[in-house]
Length: 364
Image (cartoon, rainbow, N blue to C red; front, side, top):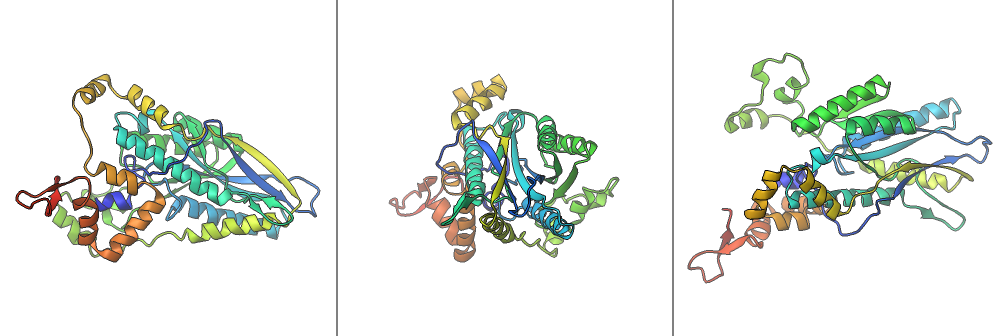
């Protein structure tokens, strides 16, 4: 279950937050023109494609960190050449019902909805207009979340062409075949458009032989991940664990961009169409319509639920909620954390003869 805490952004482990969005929302990219310049500014744009595969977050996110580094290099180059062009990071999520919703449980769809809403709010907090006594402005570094529905292989290249994106940052191939195929096809199409594609990994042990083998054609079979857990532990336990990506720099850079905006007189606004995060009711309807009828019929007859569904959905499906849980886990220890949330949760049942005082998880 700690996997759910750490990998909160997998397809079935999305986050929670209670606030609504509109379907007609538009993402606003603000580029700032210097008061000494008479020409309006263009903006170099980098896409950060959020696939829903353990990447619906801001913290420890290789795509955002790498896009920030790219923006910094671009800005340094522009400074050296006296080019006023700015650099904007555009985060985008493409909702593909056949990938994200087909055959998913109501709990899984709810977590995806909560996760997207939470992420939208987190990104919006970076782009929120800041007000001073003389002016108000938005950060020119990162745009609000763009949400569109369809197949990524069509939507992402279309958006890249629409905003003239120079690059796209996306997580490594998913383990689920339909998403993996979508990633590979979309990346190929972007390459064909001369859009630079940068992949990043969230592997805890990227130096593991099977991690390297997955990227090398014709890798030896001995490099495949061991199927026997003790054999896996013998190899993995001696490998270094990847350090977290320094996302603090992203927040600092965005704040600096917003501050710099206050010192300029001219703004050029580019509106990027966004469908917004769909209401939960629409997502549930889409999930049912894309799920095979036999599965829907079975679910209507036999009630099913996931272990610890309520505690996970209520507490650990927002980025901040998971960070808090992880800190608590590290501070209190595994046993106390498990006793508090799993044994003492609504999933716990009294132990026979305990008079209701001794309880255990009904999943134990």
